[in-house]
Length: 261
Image (cartoon, rainbow, N blue to C red; front, side, top):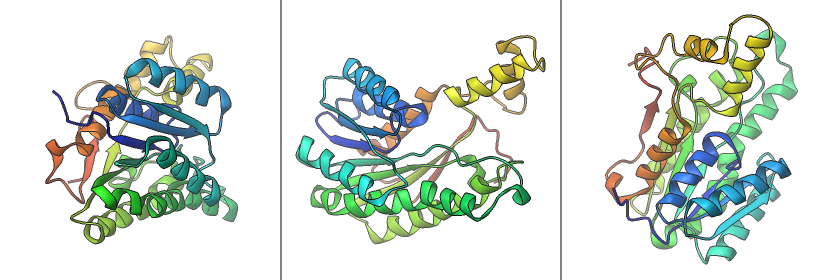
């Protein structure tokens, strides 16, 4: 299915790995010029090579820490300069520290807020005039933890919900020129889950990687964890005119694992 995104310019924060990279790949496959950022040079270089091999559009991959306002603004400016404009923004971020409430100090809370919320504030504020100039989209990659709390993830459970409130507000304030939505991913086979499974295998909790992955799938009605490219395809669809009447939506992409309505 041709989503009609050929020649559009897209920016993906923290897009050098994981679900951010999968989203950038999906947009690149549709012919977008794609910009991604990351903090690990090896990931940035690898993402550039991956994206250049994925689509025919131009690629910008650069180092930027999304917890630093000036670096976020510089990333947006560099994207606009490289591509001559901006049509789509996808905000992604790594997960904050895991653990229970009493294990978290003030620095953990403030750090999680900068990572998950202020990064979105800074990115969308800097991108807004460029998106509004020709109409555009914003898609926030969050987590199913905004709908249903997950044990041991107090920071994600609490802080990510602010992104949904921001998304809903922006979807009204920025309309009709800009559509704003969020995706709520469940378990996907990213490097993070792969590392956790491999660590569990090393501890003797599972006999094999496949057995560990099966355990992750136990409570998912579709009986498997997601492929990151499935999340990416959803993000690309939300950026397209095929989703032209979808605005202010928080869309679960979790194989049906969330029990909340």
